Amino acid sequence: MKFLVIRKPRVGTGMTPTSKVIEEHKDGALNAIKRGEIDCLYAIPGGGGSVGIVNADSAEQLNERLTNTPLFLFSEFEVRLLTDYSKYMDNIAAAFEKQGR
Image 1 (cartoon, rainbow, N blue to C red):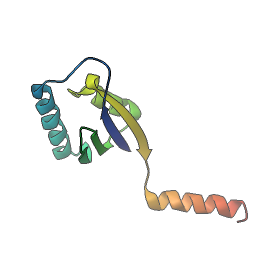
Image 2 (cartoon, rainbow, N blue to C red):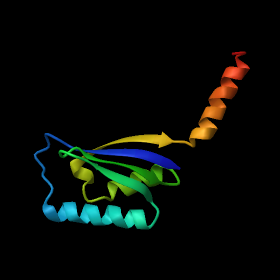
Image 3 (cartoon, helix red, strand yellow):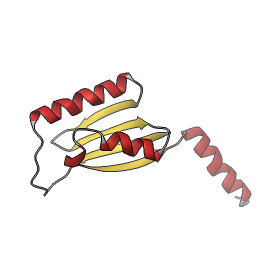
Image 4 (cartoon, one colour):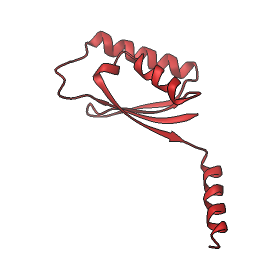
């Protein structure tokens, strides 16, 4: 399964990550890309966090991976399940066809 994961800095907690935590997070993310757990990962300029496509067998596995990242306690996450575009559009067309449109 593929998930769109948007990570934003958690504000108002009084907690600030150290440079060591940020480096650990970066190294872990780059290693996850090498292992195929992440397809792509981009930073959002201006301290906006990151966005990426993450592979996981289930929502539970994704949650486990996110909670084990060094920046987890310093972050908020928005997660969206992704599906194959062509198959999705075929299903939409079939639904319209069933409705006689």
